[in-house]
Length: 453
Ligand code: NDP
Image 1 (tube, rainbow, N blue to C red):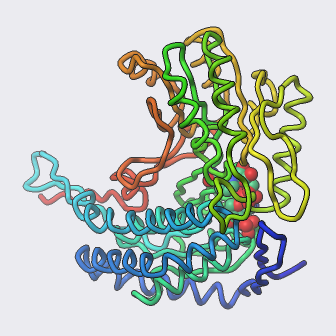
Image 2 (cartoon, rainbow, N blue to C red; image 1 turned 180 degrees about the vertical axis):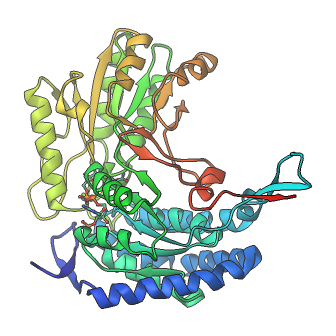
């Protein structure tokens, strides 16, 4: 087998780099450094850790352009999106620098003892298994709270973005050594690292398959995990929605990052009364998107890999065979690169592959329902439950409906977007645990109760 991680430019198919995988001794040394660093890092206190996170944010901003170029080269998102990703990654560092100490402050409890309180020491070394779709943001949104809490971090990044992983590791090491050790290993080597005594907990963002493998390894090792897996988020348009606004935002919600986001809107569930109007407005906007070289001023670049593009094309073909009608796109363009035209499929049936499976790329499915009740039932008729978006001019009614949506978040009259201040995560097969906000920083701590007689 090939003991390399390979980076390919998905815009051209050109080989960028082959990185030799780390052998057992190199992985062992990395875990040893992360464990040794954790003890002094925890001892150094919140103030020091906040300063380091602020310094990491400054480094990210200073390196914004080269990092954005690398993200763009390795996974094909537009330079504009890559720059925004680096900026948001700096923000999450600053957010936890500003708020982490308060979020983990001691909590007194009234008892008959002279003193009872809860405190939140770190767990130790957190292993992060991360995906390629936001190569810098996914890592920093997991790392910033884990580090602020006093853990150190071992990163196993997706094999196709190893350049980003190493660049990020070097950037953080310039600020302080061994806070984030990067291991270049394949997915099948992860279980062994999870079993290592020096790893206390695991965070994974990725597919359901990787989630099952990591959760199984964590169960065997009895270690806690946070899992951010796939989604098939509903974008529900009710009869009294602002159709133009919903179509505008719907296009961003589905096609940003070339559709490769766990919280992208994937199933557009539209009440019959407004379905023709929405479909027309939405498909027209999708067809007007400019796809091309991600280094140019375009709306979307290629997908991250040709195999992922081919899988999406196959899903669309099966969706059409199951009765769907192509309203925009639907083709694999000629020429090199992992391109797929922004696609809208209407008339999608609830049991179509486009409704049942996660579509991780620029293809939207539009499903029609008779009324609001049917819309909520169909929104919930998915194995996933990550986020959702609901459109109506009657905000109070939607807030009441929101309780019945089986998802980690409901966005009313806007699209789903992650935010350092707001908890993020799913239910059902979208995973467990939360990232970001005050909930995120409490995932990788010990809830330690102190009682003094
Ligand atoms: P994967 O889930 O395979 O990759 C995510 C991470 O998990 C990578 O670091 C990968 O390593 C690792 N991994 C893969 N298999 C295992 C395993 N058995 N044990 C431990 N770690 C593992 O995503 P793909 O790149 O294959 O993308 C396929 C699909 O995953 C997408 O089409 C989409 O549905 C979903 N996905 C969801 C994301 C999200 O944000 N929720 C992000 C990315 C993908 P390696 O690269 O070395 O295999």
